[in-house]
Length: 273
Image (cartoon, rainbow, N blue to C red; front, top):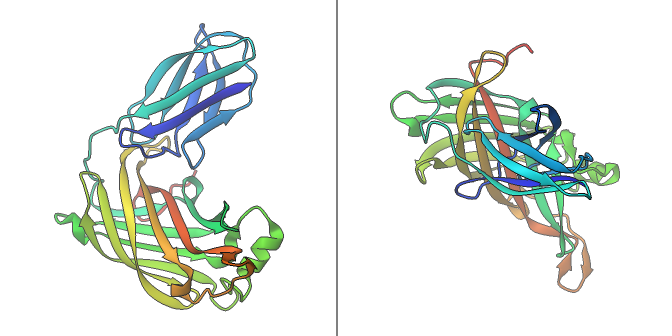
C-alpha cells in the first residue's frame, strides 16, 4: 500500500530534492513525501480508495500536477513525473554561494563481491562556490569533508573504513577538493576540473556537473541546485587494501562512484533558521 513515483528531469536526471504532496477531492493534504537520492518516492501511508491530486515541487523546477487513483488495496502508482527547469538555463547570479549541508548530500558507491553495491555518505562537510562575473568559466569551487564522518549504515564497516586500511581518518582527517577550471559540456552541464586531496594524496579529478536551477527559499534567500558525479580509482589514492574472496573476485571494487547533490545559498554564509 502507499504511493510510488519517480521524479526525473527531461534529460533523465533524478530530482533527489523533489517533494510530493497528495490532496483529496476537497483539497486537503493527505500525504507529503520526499524523493530519495535516486529521485524515487516510496511512501507506505495507507490512503482510502478514490481520486487524488498529486503535486510535485522542487527547487529550480516548475511544479507538476496530475491525478491519481488509489485502488482498493490502498496503492497509488504515479509512475514517472518529469519536471521542467524553471527559467531555462540561466546561470546563478555571480558572487559567493555557500553549500547548505542540511539540504545536500555527498555520497559514494562501491562494488561489493562483484554482485552488489555498498552505498555510503559523508555527514560532515562544507563548501563554497564563487560564480565569476562575465566569464563563468573562471568560477571556483572549494569543499572540505571530514573523513571520519563516513556512514554506510554499518558501524563495524564504518570503523574499518576510518582505519589505516582505508581513509586513515586519524592521520588524514580532511578530504578537500579545489577546482582549477571549468569547461562547458552542454547548455546546463559543465566539467569541473580540480584537485582532490584524499588519504594524503593529491590527484586531478573532474566532476560532471549539471545545473538544476535557481529559486527563492522560505527564509528570504536564493538557492541554486546542482548534481555532480565522478569516478575515482582507489589505487590512485593509495587505498590498496583488498581481500580476495574467490579467484578473480575482490571483496571491494577498485573504483568508487561519487555522487553529489548540492544546494547552495547565495551569500557568504548560511541563513539562521
